Structure formats: structure tokens, C-alpha cells
Length: 151
Image 1: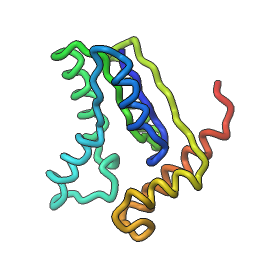
Image 2: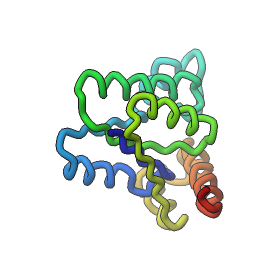
Image 3: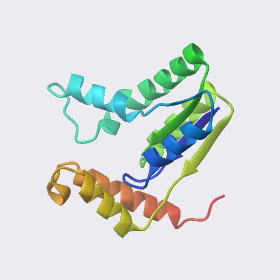
Image 4: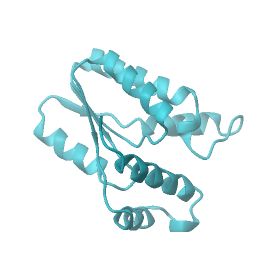
């Protein structure tokens, strides 16, 4: 089984993932942000990006790592991940469904002021952080998506 927890930065994905991990025996938390962090470090000098999700390799490698974790350890995966770009979202979801057909997606939402408070509390310089525009873009994307009916 794969449980994919999506939502804007600061909404509580990691907290929910930890609670699920405690409740689901034989589970493993995989955070694709670690893959992005690695890419950011490796590619910083030749292809700097403000957001690791802009690397074409990131969604592919994240799905690959998830597949290897499933095959090697045979555990249920809990994946907290902010994916606000529709193309990357579709690419990752399609890939994760090939890794395990027992796939469940949940999108967490919260009031914008709650998310902004959590983000400013977490980032080293709050609104002056270079990553802050990416955080705001993710919130705006989820607010728009959350206002649409589910089909």
C-alpha cells in the first residue's frame, strides 16, 4: 500500500504521516523532499533552481526510490509531499500507482493564515526567505484547487 499525503507546505503532512506510521504496522515514511535536496546539492553549480521540483529528474527519481523501497523492504509507504504543479502531480501519481496499485491519495488543506503562520515560524527568515515565493505559490495553487468540485 502507498498512502500519498499531499497539500501545501505547513499544512501538517509530516505530522499526519508520523501518526499513520505509528498506527500502521510494517510501514515506512518516505519523504521525496530528501531526493530533491540531494538534486539541489548535486546540481547547484551547473543548474541552480529555486525549487527542486523544477528538476526534470526529481519526479522520476522520487518514484524510482519509492519502487526500490517497496521491493527491497516490502513495507507500506507513507509519502508526505507537496506537489502543486499539475503536470508533476500527474507524473508522480501515475508512477506511484505502477509501484503499488493499492494507492491512496489524500490532500490536506487549512486556512491560509494558519499555513502562513506555520511557514513563517519554520523558515529561517520568514517572508525574507528566498523560498517564501515558492511557499506562497503552493498555497495559492491549493486554494484554487480546493475551491473546485471533485469529479
